[in-house]
Image (cartoon, rainbow, N blue to C red; front, side):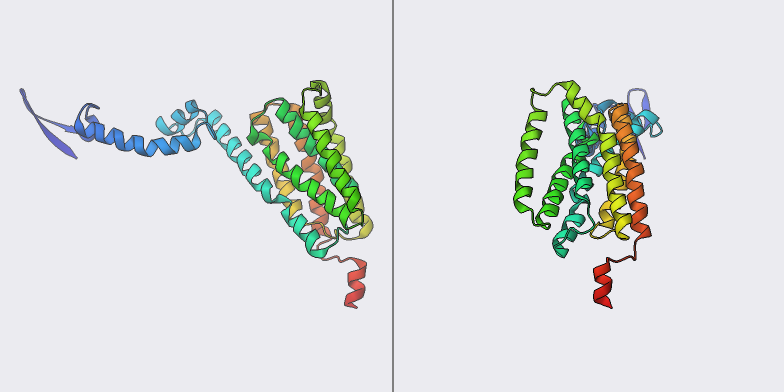
Length: 278
């Protein structure tokens, strides 16, 4: 679109893109761009991108800038995992409540998983890591505590379950306080690897011994497997901490083992259910 502009030297032609910012049309276009850019920028900066990367990708339109794309992918994955963690273990909780039974779940395995999650959460808070790199540990911890209590409750150990909740809350407060040295917090995180391995192997052994996975939720198992795989990338990208990354590598391998068992025992049923059907 071309517009005529009268001047002392005669008539000249220029495009809209050549308008000066001081012209009425230039100011209008700048205003419209700012109106669109404002909310979009606020949604991305600093939640998903630092301002420099936002300018690089969406102002300069350098869409192939690898470092900024890695940050965007990592932050997006991290926040997606955190959001998904709100629902990861709910299928497991609902399955236990629906069956009024925790058959097939290893209490020792669940408690070891709780230790690992607690270690990751405390270590991340102490080191001021971005919430997007560890936030799911908080929500998974709450859900895992619930599962621990339900397992005890349906085993007729409700009082023991309540006492366990109180003790856990006290220990967590101490770990997050200034009373706990950084060396102890780091040691707790380092202990995650054997805790994860032992916990998952205990559950795998329980599945093998029973010949089925009982009330173990397939949805929860596969979500945990996918989340731990994605966390390998995000922990490297956002924290650069080899200890965090190593824990998620081991966790992925162990979660993969349980996921394989869920598929293998897909049609297997507990012995008492088979008897009822006969």
